[in-house]
Amino acid sequence: MKAKVLKRFRDKETKQVYAPKGKTNSVYEGSEERVKEIASKGYVEIEVHDDHSSILDGNVEEVKKNADGLTVKEAKELLEAEKSDKNRSGVVNHFESLIEAAEGKPPEEGE
Image 1 (cartoon, rainbow, N blue to C red):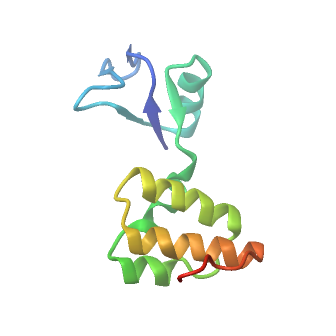
Image 2 (cartoon, rainbow, N blue to C red; image 1 turned 90 degrees about the vertical axis):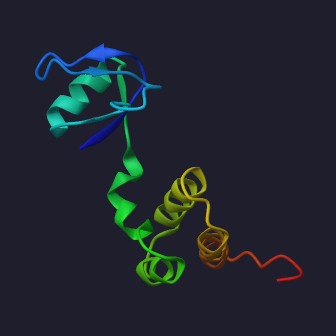
């Protein structure tokens, strides 16, 4: 399980130092139990959207294919993950159209 480091700390099990803005060790990876323990103390934030990261791997067409059958909640999580990472317009537009279709909103004019 992975978690984003919020505050600098030294892991008591590995003796490794983790820091939020470091070039290395800005993401903590460990067992679910250990990550939850550290998160409860405010040192890390559990990354929820990590479960779907494999859907965002690959090119735009592969992402569109892998996104079939997603719930609105999952599509919104993946949209935010894409915007904060690669921000590919084709992927962003696809997730936005999936969400609009599921929520019954008509597409904006000009599309």
